[in-house]
Length: 57
Image (tube, rainbow, N blue to C red; front, top):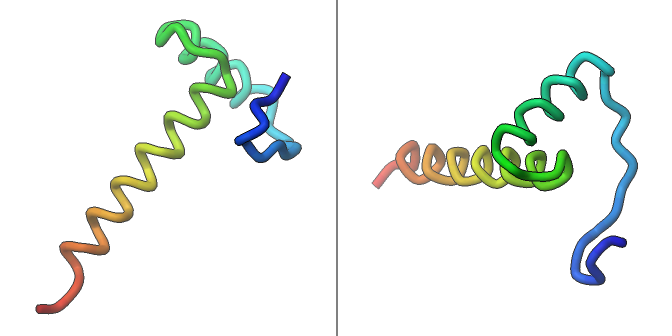
């Protein structure tokens, strides 16, 4: 069951991509949902860092 502090939403995903995510999540000992959250957090951090370095002084 979803945590009350998390937003639930439906994600339609290509079956081949799902297989890759499933294998990757198993390698990392995470659920597929946990792996997707992990990837999204990493990418958001990268984006934030890139924005900070791109800002003119």
